[in-house]
Image (cartoon, rainbow, N blue to C red; front, side, top):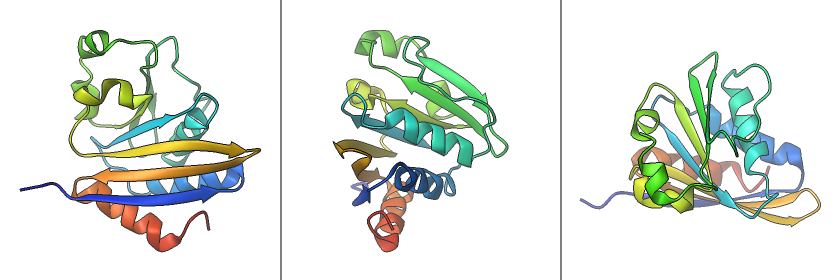
Length: 162
């Protein structure tokens, strides 16, 4: 059977609109869930990740794991695994045992996820963040699998940005 796929667009006019999307998605977070982020440098991947982490109860500073690759945080609701695979080859990423995170007790956000697409679970939410100028962003969501497709449908019901 073919897996369900759904799409949504979120137009963020301000940083708070991006935060609002992260908060909305965090409401649906469960263990083993994966958000795969992509976009140009400076598009807002790390800011989205910070807002998502805060929404699941991560205390303290969440910053880019660019050089550490993976950072683990304890949230009030569940663990948060934040990855940045920009500097990894597919082979290097494969050696890290990412499945332990992808199918673990927490929720995972992978920045630059398209670089390791072959290693990602079939079920996931992909977000492509496009910088439109100033604080404006266009966030394209693609949900693969029933759960993530329902997330896109929920975003479509809310409306683009508001």
